[in-house]
Length: 106
Image (tube, rainbow, N blue to C red; front, side, top):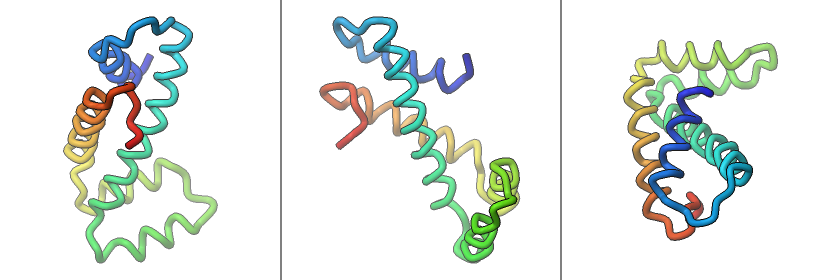
């Protein structure tokens, strides 16, 4: 189990949803992982300096570029990846715990 799954399971446990089976919990972890990764990716892109956006778009247009190359570009563009990721995870946690049904939809 990776760190994101552990983080998400802790959030689900903190929410104390009644009657959630282990199977339902696994499905919820998958769904929440996708949402969290989307939020992190969006936050990282938004953190890119304006002068790097055109270059970033060109990078994404290249079909041979993999996720590692994209991550490396973002890290080398002056974005504090760890800080952005941590802030996004904390925001995700707060959003999830304040929502009435335990969803992050708004």
